[in-house]
Every structure is written in C-alpha cells, then in structure tokens.
Amino acid sequence: GMKQSQFFTPKAKQPPKRLIQDTYRYEDKDGSHVMDVLRYKPKSFSQRGPNGEKTLEGITRVPYRLPQLLTRIKEGREIIIVEGEKDCDNAKKLGLVATTFAGGAGKWREEYSKWFQEAKVICLPDNDDAGRKGMDIIASKIIVVAESVRWLELPNIPEKGDLSDWLNIEDNDLGK
Picture 1 (spheres, rainbow, N blue to C red):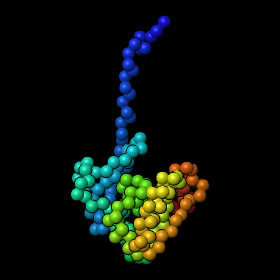
Picture 2 (cartoon, one colour):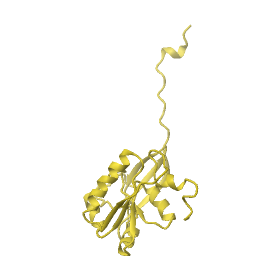
Picture 3 (tube, helix red, strand yellow):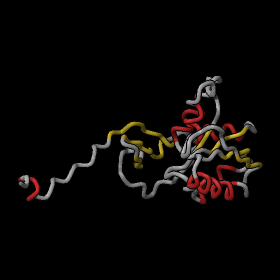
Picture 4 (tube, rainbow, N blue to C red):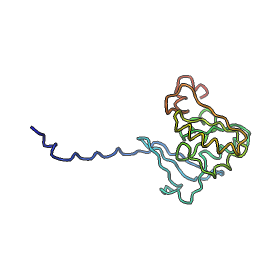
C-alpha cells in the first residue's frame, strides 16, 4: 500500500530566482558613482562597485544621497536618517532629504562622521527592536559631531514598519 515516491528522497526545491527590483546609486560629494545597493525580489540585498564588480574592496563608503545631504547641511536645514534607500527616495518625493547607510540597521562606519559636522539630524527608526537599536548606535555616534540630534517615531505603523509604510496610510502623503 506504499507509493513509489516514498522509496526515494524528494528532489530539493530550487530557491526562487532573485530578480533585481531596485538599484540604489551611491555617490561621493561631487556626484561621482561610488557603489550600488541592489534590492531583489524576494526581498534581499547585495552591493557592488561602480563598474558592477561584486567586491567593495578599496571603495570609500559614503552615506546614501551624499550630495543632497551636504547641500541641506550647508543650508542649515534638517536631514533625516532612515533605515533604507527606499525610505530615502520616498522622503525625496515629499521634498525632504534623507540618508541611510549600506547594510541595514546600525551599519555605522567611523568615516561617516565627517559628513555630519554641524548637521541638524532627525533619526527615524523602523518600528522594531533591531531598527531602534541600530538607530541608537547611529545617534550615539552622530551626536558627537552634529549640531543637534532628535528622535522621531512614527505613529500607527505596523511592527517592522517604516517611513514608506507610514506614507501609505491614507492622508499621510498629502504633501506629495
């Protein structure tokens, strides 16, 4: 009464093929291409150099949207730090300047400090423990060089939610 398939090891399922969903271009202070962060579907990320090489060896890391960040600081206006490039791009649609760092929550590198001299920073963590802990690390480093650092948590977003989720709540995007 057994089926033939019960006598053989089942074939391993192939993992789903990753498709590039977005490419986020990182630029130095002069607007030259430094590196890319690739967002895939299903959700995962990778990084590559400006010529497509899969290594970042020898590449100086910079915050995302650095030229816009520096302009905003020079104007004495506030900048927002979020956890991902998608949130930065969505903030741009509202006329805001937001930045993030390749690698996710808390991926601070000491060389980033120089870009935040005299900055007025708003830290906007994702709505989860990892997001708050990562943003706390960043805030503790930036406060040493910035003019001011403030903390903002968005209301009514789900667990693990972010700025993009908040903007998708009806009427939260009236500034668009």
